[in-house]
Length: 300
Picture 1: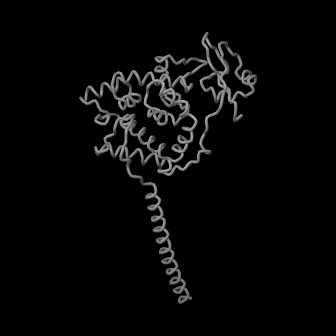
Picture 2 (picture 1 turned 120 degrees about the horizontal axis):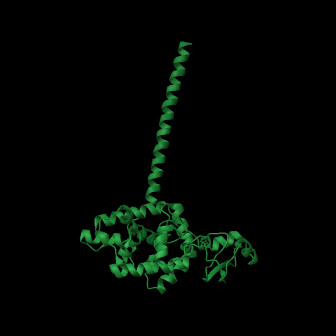
Picture 3 (picture 1 turned 180 degrees about the horizontal axis):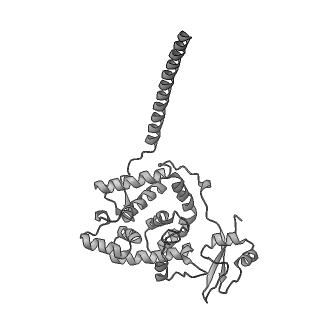
């Protein structure tokens, strides 16, 4: 029995050593695979970077590294980056003509991407809609916000008001990059930073972390969305969210039951709310104003 026990222990030891070696090889293989995977997700910085035609000085060390950070983050935030690429197919065609009409550089559409991921988001601070207007700012720019209507959720109207903000800020800063940063920090906040630091270039300013990252997030998403295949986001056109054809109903009267109104238009209440998120009540009080309600003509 003693001799058999020793034999058993010896065999057990051999098995344990063999198992350890197998585990070690397996672990090394996994590490190799992970290294290869990480290499696949490495992308060199683009050589020519600009916002609204204003060159980004990537030769400055901290500027280069801050841009690198946002490119790394957003190329690896797969779900959110895929979603904005898909949504852009539907919403950029609505945003772009409004920017152009108002003389705002096309790059400002990427502010919507980083503000709300091209959705009617609501922040913890109460900023709402694609452009994330606070209630007070919305009222300052004559967007209706009351118990029945919140025009921060009307993409066309909110984009028009965002353009007003951009033009006012450009009159102050005469620089589109500072205008973009001011949309995050506020015109007054950017003015204080410029005056106290004796510089007037975004890339030379020491700012709070959110505003410090803000323009670089825009630059990163612009680069990725314009070169999606290069960064591994090979999304076929047919998988993107196409614009939906709608018709507009002119309304200058109160509606007591929006669900009944939707049924009369041949749709349901869900679709009415999805295509008119600015209707925030079950009824509509127009207060002698004219509104246009969108009715989807497809996908119903």
